[in-house]
Image (cartoon, rainbow, N blue to C red; front, side, top):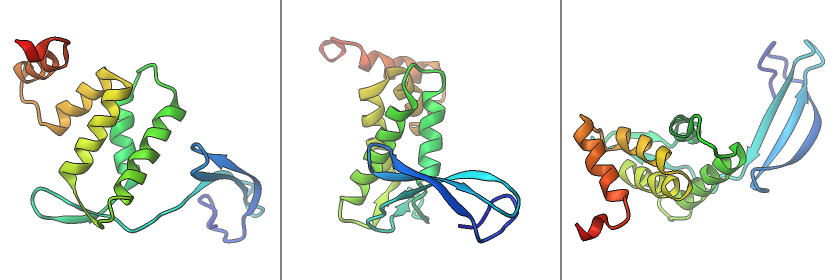
Length: 154
């Protein structure tokens, strides 16, 4: 593993342990050339996924990009980072287990929203506001009113 600080290719593993509910391995590494310390994660990747955007454009699935958007929605919410990481890993496993390599971006957004709705309603609304492209307060009001119990009876 190349050192991110000096580029040395001869780094040493100081500690390895399971991470993310045993679906990844966390490795603490040390660079003897510059003394830098850093962490790497190894995950199983069942297949290379390609995201098909609504415009028809295709791009490689980026777990980190999805994780960033979820973490932004979860900012300052009382949810443990481990639980967020488990949710992200679960979403990726679900996408990989579809058997398809081409995944519509709409499907990814729906799966993320479903997962967020089970963990935190505020994060769910935050994510939905970007995903569904809310334009004004009325869009928020309509969406939130659908979340309230008994809203289906109105």
